[in-house]
Image (tube, rainbow over all chains, first blue to last red; front, side, top):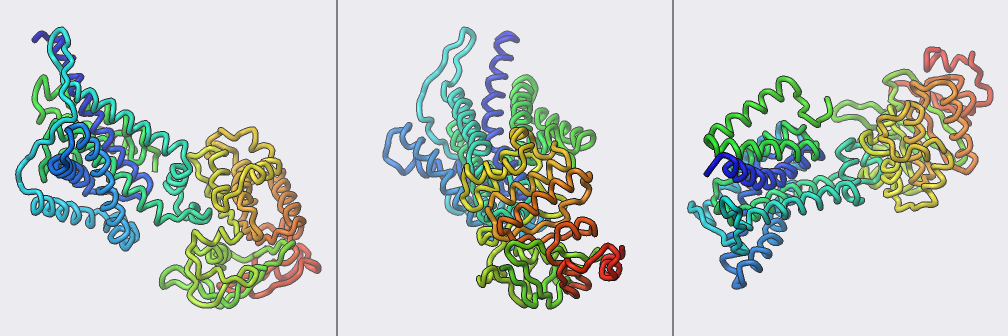
Length: 292
Length: 231
């Protein structure tokens, strides 16, 4: 394949990666922005989404498209419930202390991972794509499902954006993000906002996993890479900035896709990590974050 | 009437308010004065449920509010304008007002009322709150609080850092609201402002209201100002 088509393929792969990464990282960014909690277990919410998707598609006796759609609804709901329970039973009791919640979510990471190992097993298992369809370009054929992943991620992200900027619940979340005490002085139940935010963050990670699992397979250790890349994206974009997270996800996703194709995935991760180091040195608040 | 009876309150092991008693009546402006650290702001936060009350009670028209979680207090009709305004800075003027309206499910009539009170805000509805001038920010902080249609308004040093014309505007607004029957509790350090606005003045020291007197009889030269505020 000549350079042009090869670059096009790399860009397509990068765009798929960027779309899923944006979805995962926006969840992490929302949780940090509103609650000031660094959720180290965010990657495990992603993994749970994929594992639940496998269970749903394996056990429900419906056609692939229908069970996959069921998984896209059921997995985020279950993960949101687990996240809300975690908030109420663990984070709230720690009074959302930044250091304590980091330790607690590290503990949660291992608990969820071991639970998945126990009930799901150590094997990577495939989830059937909802449809088989290839686009035939002049130079190569490309998976229609991968393009669908990009469209679906964009639709979900647009819904999140509309929710945050146009709905009353989004307004309440943004007000709480700015000033928790003043929000309470205006009748906002901060505990409920925090539980909802943590649930939404988990649900977004799970939705991202359901989208990607027909491409990648479900595995109990699959949460590591999304967690690392989400942190990279959130730090580069600016902690708590959704706009920054989206831009950084696009940059990291595309560069990861292109560098992985032309060189190696390891080099892509090294460059992304270097980029984080540069941002931390020269613009610690991130590209779109506010100065402390 | 807002009645604070013998409350002791503070942050963790640190006690700030000690068996403090105080009341605010409808249609009156009650000013609270005292030196830094006397507990003035802590008193307002205790009323709002933001500082735990260890003993004593706070009632509004006979209904205890000190047992309520902080987010339920404003629903009882107590609005709070904190020191430093504490606006939702990245949100627009319209969104800040919307947050105020959500508290007690108030609608367009209340919105129009507060925007009529501060017409300058109507011209800046889409402007981000943190980009307003200091005076406009204070207007917005008061407007946001008034969206609750409160029966009690707590104001913590609203004239702090403002130019005289803006202080006069806010003073006139508070007096207009008083005439509608609103009970206003005003923490203030400026003697001239207190003498123009107050119906009663409560002087605080060491976490207690030591003296609570009608404004009549107080002059800028009164020894109470010297004793409790140091001016």
